[in-house]
Length: 98
Image (cartoon, rainbow, N blue to C red):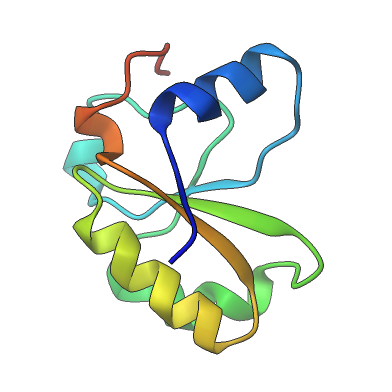
């Protein structure tokens, strides 16, 4: 499994990189704050929304602690997507949220 540290994601965003971040948490979790620019697709709906994603792009999967995003990673990887899991999830995120 490809992984990235939350600090690396924050640095890339601060350097102006355009990242495709998918937050797979539930609505009430996302309401508490998510990474600016992230797209919210709940884990339970990731399979049906996969067709809306661009297979030529890379995606960073995020959840609360890294478990659910790991499941989303596996689903999208099996469909041929280039995915990376953010280790520690939002519990390890120290950057800004929206």
